[in-house]
Length: 393
Image 1 (cartoon, rainbow, N blue to C red):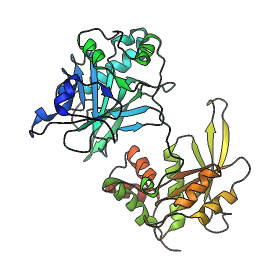
Image 2 (image 1 turned 30 degrees about the vertical axis):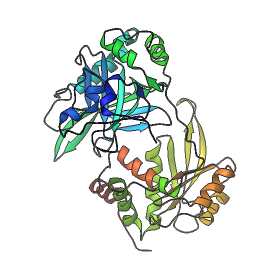
Image 3 (image 1 turned 120 degrees about the vertical axis):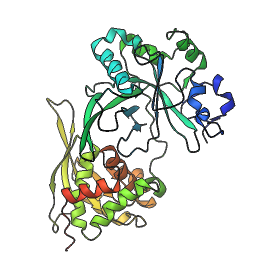
Image 4 (image 1 turned 90 degrees about the vertical axis):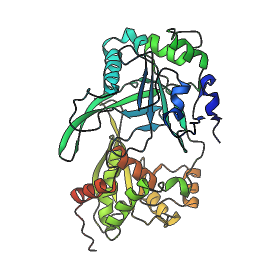
């Protein structure tokens, strides 16, 4: 269980990765823990800045992680945090927002790319997400704008609502490899001394030389349980249910959808062929994965197997063996299912070291949300437009 910091102790607490910081119980804005934990950043909003956005000493980014239209996302395996700006309604210019969140993003990323020797003027960003109860929050890390080798770290994207168009930012941050942010450093920042000896070494390394040291967290288990492969109740479950219901009588149609989902997961994946309904050789689709520099890549071939199964009907050893047996020399496999891979099959897959990627139901939900298909209506429209349904055998 994660460490919990009581509301009454927040003013003197350090910030510990994935620790919970309790909110108050009065039922008003004074219950917000962030204003007490980080004095000077206020008690409302996703963007909070100490000192105003023009001369920000420190910034807090808060996310509930459940906005279907603007799917903030933490990739714990790579240490990259994707965060959307605060222009979320039509009728406003990109930077015309009450809390100046998009102005803060613009100025921080502009300084990063146009004045790299002035990184000290970019505020440290503290990432928090919603806790499980009340106003509790979870500290997710100390971050800096940008990522290593990705020029598209701040992009203005167009969205529409009720026929009206508007822009918002999608920003990428790197969560730095430090487990604790000390209270001493937070106090030093507030006093105008961010390079105090208590400053995290990885942050100073970035400030002085631009080196990104992401907090990379590898999984501790070799395979996922059934529960870990199935989507959470509510939105994610409803999204996968839409896909299953759409193709439940048309499994060959799902093969095309599975191939598309794999491509949406990683832009380096290219689907070359979705095989015919019969005589497919045990391979529902074939494709390649691009590795290396754009000017001189190599392509790794793969075979894809698609299983449109009900949530309570897992993929077993027999189906998995079918895919493994069809893999050719130097090929890997991708299994896409609207359910889960059974315990024995998953265990044998990892124990024997077969190169097969498992895209289970929860992964499908994540792919849909990250690509802006975060509601059942949006998924239904996408399915209808992309895969005209023909349930006939």
